Image 1 (cartoon, rainbow, N blue to C red):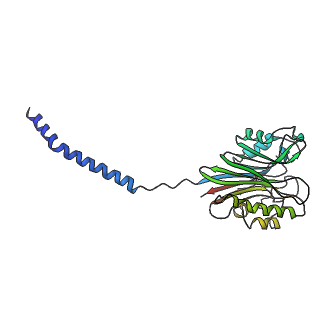
Image 2: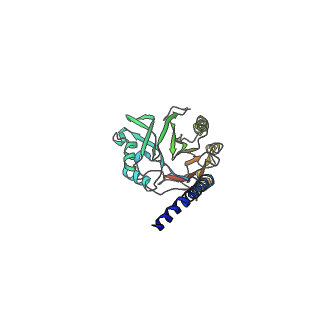
Image 3: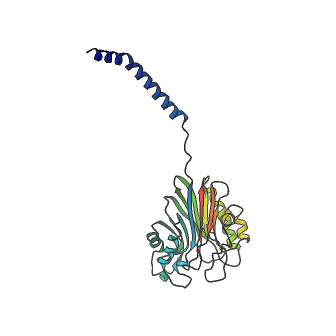
Length: 281
């Protein structure tokens, strides 16, 4: 029985000390963990953006084939797509809802806004997105001459916890650039209505680099192709004398960093799409 008594005495004399020692070690470990740890840097947010004048789903061959349009989009795996020349309920496209069909074919959410009543339906711009839409609106431009009404979609999107202002437009095509210049002045003022938000602006501007329209846009925005594009970046037309008239513009500064830009070759429209990849800081 003596060895039992000795063991009991050891527990009585050493147990409290061991417990105190263990408690001290635990406290020191917790202090080091809570006081010395550093926050891991947040993962960068990378977005892929496409702008695409789809010519109401009519390809370079003149045939309306919305599946071909959707395939051109899906091939690039964009997070956001700005669409121009979009029909909804128009006779020439059999009264179909093109934004809704493209949303179903791409697995994205669509937003459409009418600018011009045409052939018994609506004609305007649209956006497809994988990101949550927090707010959306459309503004109509002032017009110098009676013609097709044009507008610009403005959306606040939740880019993985970061709010961005995304816009798309399609401005006048005529040789006289007076209406385009007027519209650019209206575009330049829009970011002021969304203070603090980085801007991505897409669309068909119907004018070439170095034009008065292009120079005016560069007073407020950065031309993505000039920063990261390679080559001439020609987007119009797939079967006609080519021009660079489709753009992805971003707000200047470090909030949005362009990584790369490219022009996929497809016959799904008379335009080629323009795709850009961006990192949000």
